[in-house]
Length: 118
Length: 199
Image (cartoon, each protein chain N blue to C red):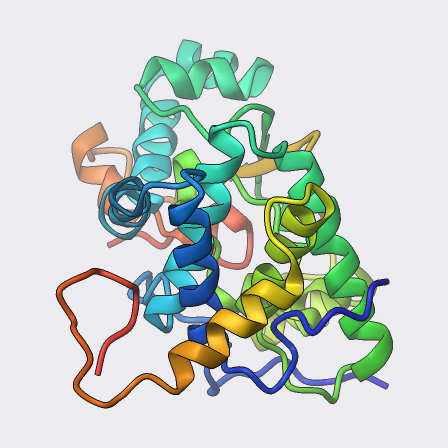
């Protein structure tokens, strides 16, 4: 029952301090949104943390130690959970907007900083 | 648990994040420029170097060391480090016979002002569960072999207490100044998964 700690993979414990803080740009946006929103009083950090713990627990129940672990996916889900619970957004709205973004034509305007790179 | 699509659905998280940021920006709840500043802060300004300065000061100033052990948050603030996730830092000292190691069993609590954001392995379910069940074996796998007579204490960080380890000052560094000690102190030593080595 003892799973090995991933010594060489993406979650490996580094022997130096040279690890990237965020693996992908969207992770940094999801992080920044949570910090900014709690700082502005949209929710308390304790509320966000409770949502994150719930998402992590649910993942562990569903996946055990064999599933694909992605911390910031759970972070993002927790962020949506607290925002939905405060009616700041609805899950359907986020999905609909994401679908629309998925179908935007190639070569769309990149003037805005919207957190992804090509 | 709700069964909303969340980010576990088929929509890639990058798109879902972008959609969420657009909606929140349109509603005036966030400002993308402020998000940029937060990201820059944690990517470039706040990191383990802050904690290393705290440790080096404690090693060279006995009175500061005592203040640090008595009230971590206040002593750390003396050096100018404070902010999110730094409100309740408690510092514990490692010695030749007592070894503290930090974990957050429920999520990823971590003293951001002194260590920056936690590394991937700290958030990993394997580290979070095994460090509690079999710390000596896991530390050995991570490269830290502790003698059997060293007592290991696992410290579980929460929103109420965020632990920071004051590593043992290595032998052979007595002649070094505070400034010379700073680069020796690694993040891993301040989490308790490594020791500080003399240069």
